[in-house]
Length: 79
Image (tube, rainbow, N blue to C red; front, side):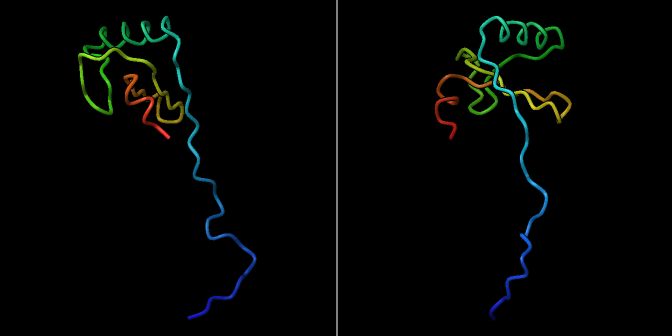
């Protein structure tokens, strides 16, 4: 079956999500303090290894400021 080109893209809305990468040690320490105050530990959300230190935090403002902590190994494996 051959489809004719209609001049319109299949998807008209962009599917991008804005994220902020925080790699400042002072900011990471502040996020860690906030997490501990909420009864949570700041561990890598990708590998789950609690023994590795956090190298960066991805913040998704549109998701209610959802945060994902990443260790250095997982951060380097990201595309």
